[in-house]
Amino acid sequence: MYIVGAIIWIVCLILNIKIAQNKGRSVAAWVVLSIFFSWIALIINLLLPPKR
Image (cartoon, rainbow, N blue to C red; front, side, top):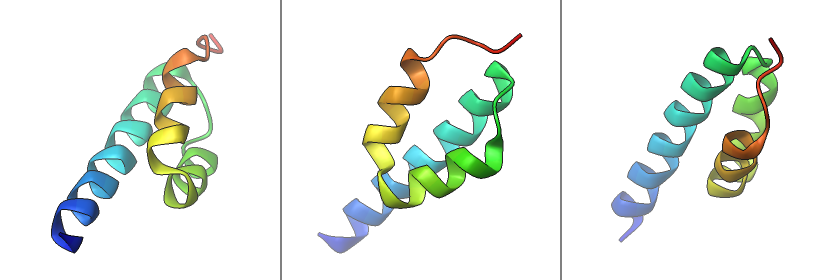
């Protein structure tokens, strides 16, 4: 069960990095947020408009 949770956490982390890059946001900030709030940070990152 822990393996499934770890895989979901890693997928959320990678998606947050890709989305932050595409939207022109700070990747480092989104990595930190994703470490602590994985899927919540992903949803927020998806809903925010691009900076460009």
